[in-house]
Length: 220
Image 1 (cartoon, rainbow, N blue to C red):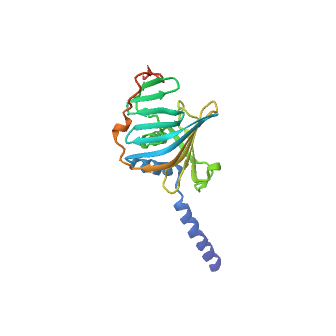
Image 2 (image 1 turned 135 degrees about the vertical axis):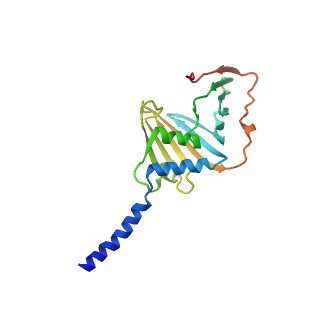
Image 3 (image 1 turned 135 degrees about the horizontal axis):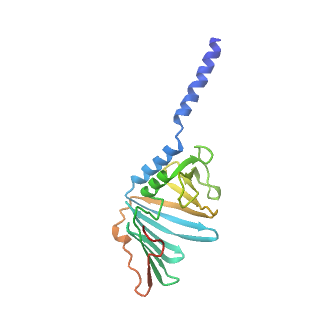
């Protein structure tokens, strides 16, 4: 009997230790937010896929909400957000689209502010387990989270995050709409704290372009 108890005791110790080491999905997402909160700025290659449409470019972010994407596909297209105004230049149509952004809206979720919003609005869970899994065709090992709305009125019915377990950076983000459409963002070649100046987020638009204001939504 004593021998049996000793064996069970030896088995129980590592079992309880493994439970103690498990991080909940909520805590894991908080760690990701804390990681991004520690960045003054970052740059990364970004690829965007929505249905059969693909876009690619280089994204720059400066804390707290400065954002810029210089696209290589479509060539020369630009998106800039200075914390108050979103500007999109569409060279194909020689058009500048401006949108005033208030009420805490953030055009990107791959920032500390964006992740904080996700934590408030969505409940996270591991897709399968807290263990790293391959990122399909990309081959990277990631931790996968599935985020479900805590209440109605959210843009996506589900968000999936693929997170690099080594540095807690978002490798892929997928938003699934209520109609079933999927928008995917891939982030690669990430460089943090590069000393990006605010001047990068001042966009000098072509004088010949037509300007359209408040194209996206009306603030309430």
